[in-house]
Image 1 (cartoon, rainbow, N blue to C red):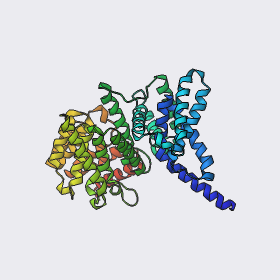
Image 2: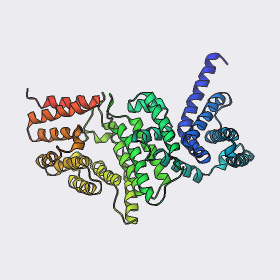
Image 3: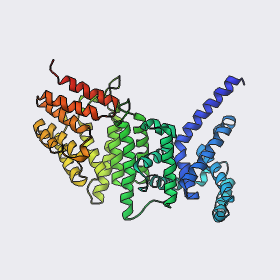
Image 4: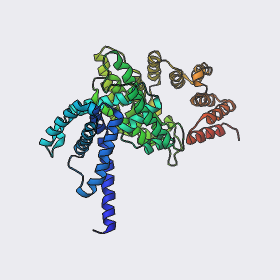
Length: 432
């Protein structure tokens, strides 16, 4: 074999290993976390197994069960580590017995790991990575690292922050979990609801950063939406009886269906009502509507109302079902926002409700509601408030006032594409 062909083979092997790692890393880390009781240590052991794969697989080939190979290699390293810590002798014996059983059934190592065990470990890892003891930024970074399989560099590029910043967030998050003695377990009882809310928030934060980037040159980042959807679908499989989990998945599926229609060929934003609905992904819409139906059925079975994510999914479904903007059931959307505002009151919800009111009952009715929100402190630097106000003023044939609002919105916007779009709207309000 020539040097060039050998290099090509190695490069192909590394690409295959990267693909395997993206798929299997969360399972490997989850299983090791249960064994060693420390998420940071579990990731270190998993990384050791990855390095071993990079060294061995180019020569030996990718194993038939790469995930099992990684788990087995990481467990060997865990045993070596525990042997060096006399205080963990009991764990050492347990792992040694577990490894002995696995070796008896080799090469089918994954036969010793049941789907139920993998699912339980993954669920524990989800709740650990999203623990409220961590800041929101740390939860997002750690979740993408441990469960999404993203590298520190990939996370940094996705959120437009320096790589050392992300690395520090992850390191500090692991230390915080260890210092707080956070147990590697799924919460139960009253704590489950609050902790699940944190998990859903993290996943939706990731999705929203892909759906409408807060900063940078790109208006959408589909890869982040895909990462969030993958995490949401995994969670729905692990918690099939939780209505809000399916509600979040439904919301993300339906919103993700519009990704291709949200920008023009040069990346310029396209508002919802101007999008080519023929470019909406009907498969994602179908999946979203099915997830919404599941959320509604579970809520009904438990005798409770729909949660905030399921309600937002129901609103998104109104758009998905309308073949044209004119067919949108705006009155139903207003009614859904009424319920959402009671369940999860916030000025942002009220602003979205005002937009729906304007579409259902006219721009004057919407503007009246928007004007009541101008003194809300939480919206003081929220660029969508002057954006909405500018749009309604333009519809009421008040172009000079609309121009001022669009310029204010552009000054607040951090995303370059959105800022340029708002300035275009401002310029369009100026008489020639």
